[in-house]
Amino acid sequence: MKTITCTLMAAIVIAATGCSGGSGGSEGSDGGSPVGSPIDETGADTAPPPPEQETDPAQGETVSTFDLSVGDCFGELAPDPNLETIETVPCSEPHSAQVVSTFDLPDGPWTGLEEVAARAQERCPADLASLPPTATDGLEVFYLHPTERSWQFGDREIICLATSTAPRPGSLPVG
Image (cartoon, rainbow, N blue to C red; front, side):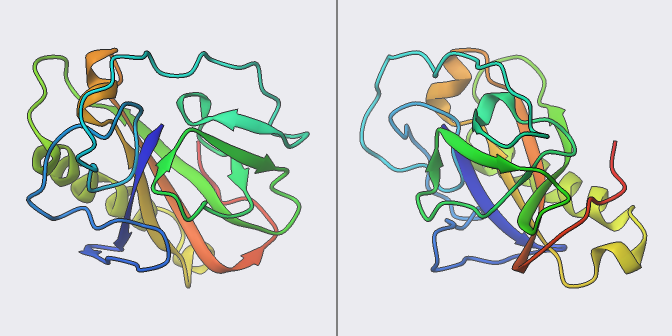
């Protein structure tokens, strides 16, 4: 699972429709996989993250959050902030989200949710802002990030997403 965090360009937006706020001081284990923020406090689960799946986003299919790539498009974010999979769609079809960029946090011990969120909130809005303004009008920034549990299994990736409340066809000029 990846945690979803919502960011409206440079400001954090806590959405009541399924995204958890990323600036809260809560920290803990979410039961495992990478997810949006904050991490829920259900206790440590030692099961490894889901196995990687072969995917072809051009065809549209269910993809592990660990297998998303820059340019992937999907219909909408599930209301569950603890995502394990996402249904991709061809970018030529109407969609509500696209992966804009990904980056890895440095190896080392878990530094806490606040540090992970700070890195994502610094980089993801900047990555979206680097695209042509006409392509990004009306888009919001969301990101998926590691949790304390997924960190134990080597997950260091933050996935920056551009989202729209109204599905739209076409691909952003990313990658």
